Length: 309
Image 1 (tube, rainbow, N blue to C red):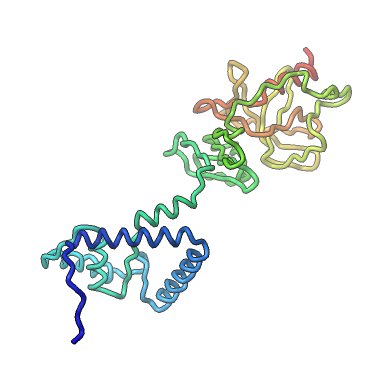
Image 2 (image 1 turned 60 degrees about the horizontal axis):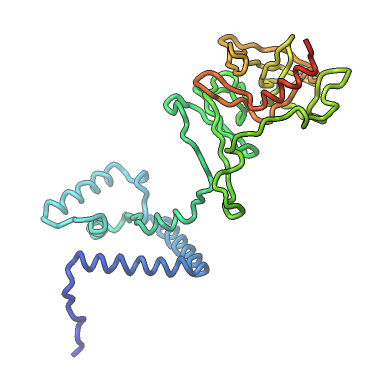
């Protein structure tokens, strides 16, 4: 006569704890062995796709109203019959026994830990000011800047600072921490002031405007500086037609170091050879309305030497 398995003296909670511990050990072994982990992932994906194709797995959004009501009533009936549901695992097991057509997938702490290991901490994203006012966020793959707008703009180029509904920008930097012991990325450090001695001698030719750039490629969305009388003004290029640019300019504040968007847009036609300087990055917000050009000392030096009063 065959003997049955000896009865365990462990309580239900102890059995569940033992099972969870065994699962953690299994996941640790799988995580340590890269080939085993990839093989298990492929098997799980194939099994999941096959069950989903057969209709054995349904997402919550795919359930009919009747199935949703049945799911809720099933849970209520289990508790009403006196069954003890003490944790999520027992809840999932109870529902699985009642209705095997729909599979509940549980995300455990070990699953989260496995994902956390894959998420790099080298992406630094600061909190965005005026989050409730943000309606549109634009970017492009060639830039590390997110642009936030209060309304969706169909005129300005996505990934460039909007000239109409701009709320500010947010830099996103990727840091390779394996190459350096410094935890602060270079882009987050204060920029060094540009000394006049570092500028080329031919910065201001005797004929024409100052050109700090060689063969500049000015496209829509480029930020430029243009000199008017004794002051320079930043603006964003909205349209390029041959050698002519349509530029939307910012206005100077009282202190002459910060700029803001005027209530009535100031759009001017500018020739390419009339551009004093091409900004490397857009002006940065320093308050709710005012913005600062990071290279203002550099541009001031150009302005004083190229356009002496």
